[in-house]
Image (cartoon, rainbow, N blue to C red; front, side):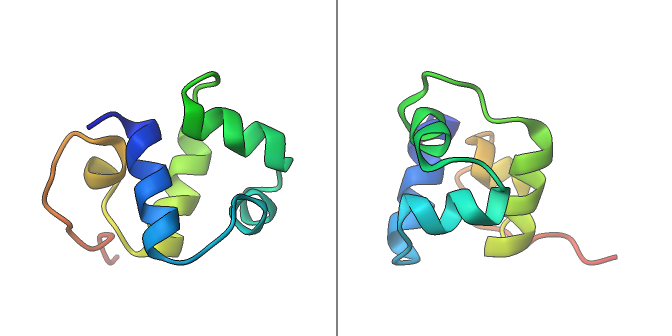
Length: 74
């Protein structure tokens, strides 16, 4: 699964709107929609924010792994 499909799936499973996630990332809703559609690549910093917020590993969010692992604790 591509990362843009995965971030949409995760957001929808959490019951969040694109606007809510865009606010979390400090970007506009249109920019976040472009991340989900694959028009624009999501910056690594924003992937890190999403990983912490959803408590999911970056490997899962980026589609490298299909195993839902928690975000690593320090």
